Length: 303
Image (tube, rainbow, N blue to C red; front, side, top):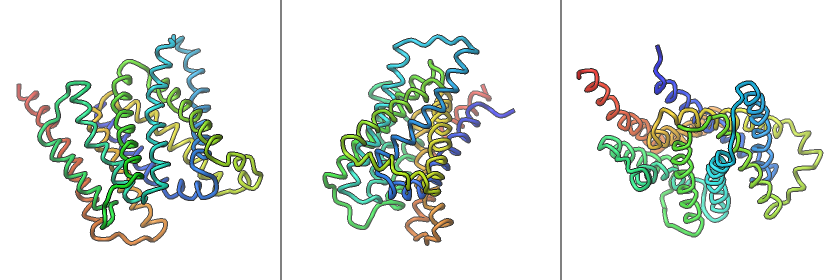
């Protein structure tokens, strides 16, 4: 019989595959409509889907939801939105490759935050695995010249936001329903994205007929709202009941690997030797992070 942890690991890896595979689709979509506008539509549709499912579930299971629970879910959504906000503005001043590396640094931040806020220590193999994956991420995404500018600082703030999102999401997932948490945080992101779209973007573009008659846009919207948002964030929240925040971050760092493989398959892009070595380092890092837990299982069985 499959263990809960094995199912959680596999499910989270599947989510990472979805996000990596849809990266090309999202890139094309935001060429048709601006980022906050696209995210507003994407997350509001996903939130509406989950809200309907939540209402049906609440009626059948007679689940009581308090104001504190809603605030908790909104707080998680706020940090996730913060990641998108800093990343979007950071990309105005830096390259996507540097942004990919700096965003991935959340895997280094999570064990630090876990120790500061939760007093959870990280094992030696996990530390080596994190450093190995970080080196792989650098090879996979960074350019030859790497100097920090204002855009890089904004993307570093994005990494902090994503790290805190994973940490807080993991903390609340043990006490609240994954369906409820994912619903509230996605609705929160959709609402905040709508506000930013109205303030910073030409949101009226979202009302144009030619946009909603564009099949590639509709396909991208369906793929991202249903699979890459509603389903993906529900799976992540549910998986965090069984997986530590550090391991979650290590699995999610596979996203650029899947993105690179998708670009190779869909766009016929050639993978450089640095990219291949970077992917290998990330995979090795994931294996190293898993070693301590397996050793503990063996010692527990021996006892």
